[in-house]
Image (cartoon, rainbow over all chains, first blue to last red; front, side):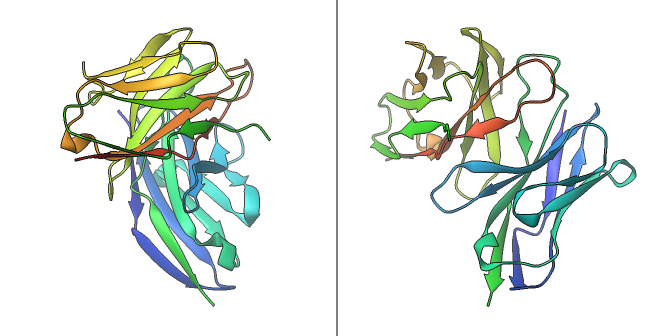
Length: 116
Length: 116
């Protein structure tokens, strides 16, 4: 079984400040890890993913995340927040794709507010 | 850019009525999913579908739920007799499923179902 915990349902940052969203996972198999972003009235858009290989992964819009197996974490960061980063962010885990299923298990989401 | 579409964007129904939520996945994708998000809660996996059959389903996906790909383009979720607790945002997703590297799931904008 897999699970994801996101610390903080709401995060407020000033424009230009560091964005740090925390995600911890539990998985009995090597995890595939994802961050999705949801803007108002839109679907979930993939920001970045870790499957295998390099543990520091870069995504769209200047975001990056680091897979730390020893800490079972996959925290999302962006050095300088922009007003357009205001959205809800979801961390998710899946098992490696050996079957046709490959479902995603999501965390509870973190809503980011960016102050001018 | 290809995208997953869902209709309607908002559906209001009376308890006990049947509803059908419709999705048009990206045209060359092979794997299809339904997720739901009850207000204030996590995004939860419902079912995955491949090669015209269910490949995995959650405990939420009981006999009241069914999925179908009736015509090669649409992917539908039917709830036979809606309950108040079925009120949620329902997301459809699709994945290419080609061999090689991992293929991400692309999400639609969701259908908000309100059961009165």
